[in-house]
Length: 77
Image (cartoon, rainbow, N blue to C red; front, top):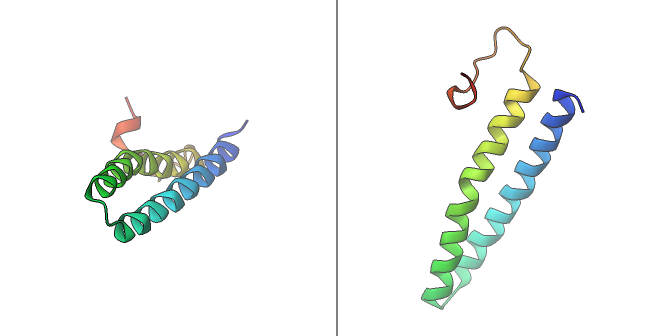
């Protein structure tokens, strides 16, 4: 698997995760039970960093060999 293929995979994963976050936000807004709304908010807060990381890794793997690309500090040594 090449880095460009990995990038597409990360991008697809990020899109799926973001779609799920949107669904959970809609469910949270429609929820009348405070306990269930709290559970949905917790799940959203768990998915958000995973979504951010997938987006960052998609950009990093897509532009890994570009000299002008600013690499994220989290993924450099």
